Amino acid sequence: MSVRRVSWVIAMVCLALVTASAGRTLSASGQEAQKPRRAPDIFFVPTPTEVVDAMLKVAGVGRNDIVYDLGCGDGRIVATAARDYGARGIGIDIDPQRVAESKETAKKFGVADKVKIMEGDIFEMPIGDATVVALYLLPSLNVKLMPKLMKELKPGTRIVSHDFDMQGQWAPEKHIEVTDKDGMKHDVYFWTIPKQ
Image 1 (spheres, one colour):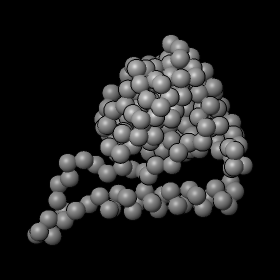
Image 2 (cartoon, rainbow, N blue to C red):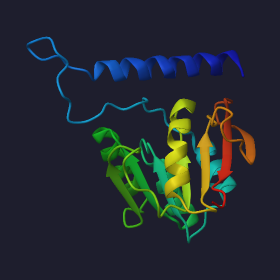
Image 3 (spheres, rainbow, N blue to C red):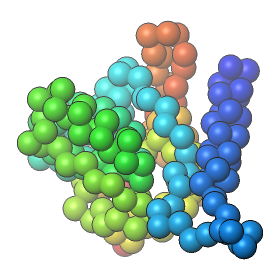
Image 4 (tube, rainbow, N blue to C red):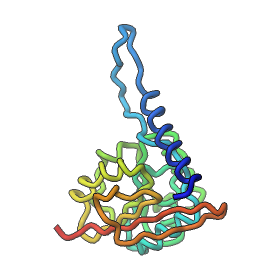
């Protein structure tokens, strides 16, 4: 892993920790107040176009697929899946700003009728009708999601992740490296939900 990549990963982890702690508020008594919505576990970093294409290709996305993007950010993965591969897309994000951006992306791509964006917690929202699941989360979150993926997804459902694997908990079936237009290298990992 390059020094640039290591620095980027460290920055991502630090910002995620700051974001999580910034979401806490204190009541007048000094006790932590109840928050109606959980803070995001990770901050938004856009997936480069070259990586989006590689993810969708390695997952073999086609017009019969329902592509879920868990932590969809600006919605570019599900919008591209709909526009370029004929799939239906469902994006889930806990951040209302990202949800609004994703809906705009779907409109801009001309696929608002094929893409649904929902605000919610990826650990709580149902995902059982997905045929492909896209991830761009920290490795610890990927591992935390594994029980949900195994429980809710049908055997044969494809999982594809940008940059982060399952920390040795689940070996990928494929691992490719993609170079973006700025010359930065990215990893793409692929798994298939096994038969129970």
